[in-house]
Image (cartoon, rainbow, N blue to C red; front, side, top):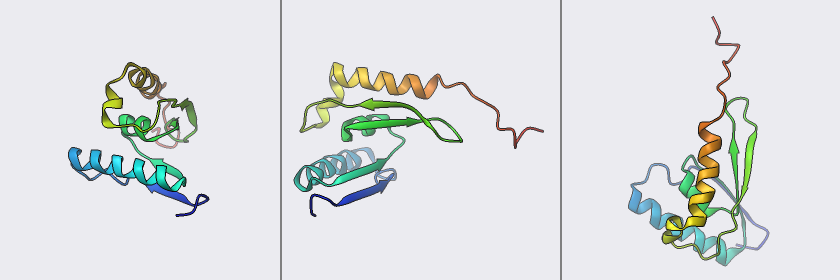
Length: 112
């Protein structure tokens, strides 16, 4: 892979068991570090998003807009133990707060 390549990944590990998922995350981090490619990674797993990313975008429900952008300044490489650090927990709290405090607005097209 050349340094200007891009990887577009939409829930690539979603169907995997947790141990295989962790191995694949580590594999992706290694590939990314070696290739310097840009990676757009879509996931619904908050831990996965923070561990794998330099920047996380949390979206609202439809119509989707960016609720918050979280800059992940955790040092690399990021072994799995990174998820046990206070810095990781602080980033996760920001993401979770935006996911669970969003005001639910009824969809006008579904209103009866």
